Image 1 (tube, rainbow, N blue to C red):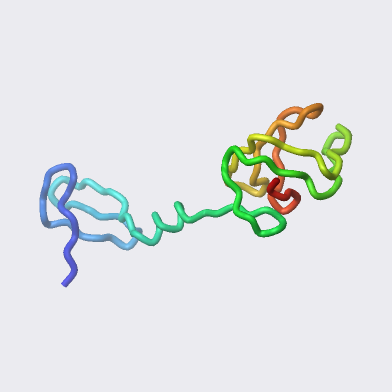
Image 2 (tube, rainbow, N blue to C red; image 1 turned 135 degrees about the vertical axis):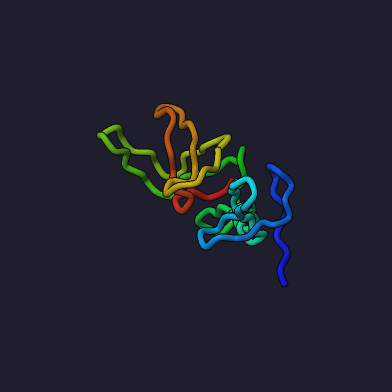
Length: 115
């Protein structure tokens, strides 16, 4: 028999899990999400990698490995351009940074190499 945590609002031990991933207290009608250990491990296990497979971290310096055209006719970021102090973010463009002469932009980690 599985045991459910007590209600955080009233302390009742009569809680149950509904079908939508929430715990429910029948005494005070309080609902709260079920926290699974697998979900928290996946969120903290995110690792960003460069084109060579090296792990990236916030504050790293990277080098652009191919010419990148900028949208809107803003020019081209040339191969070999060094980008300092990157910030890693979730999304299709993994890196937020500032490039001298271009300003703030987002890059994909597959187009950079850790320096």
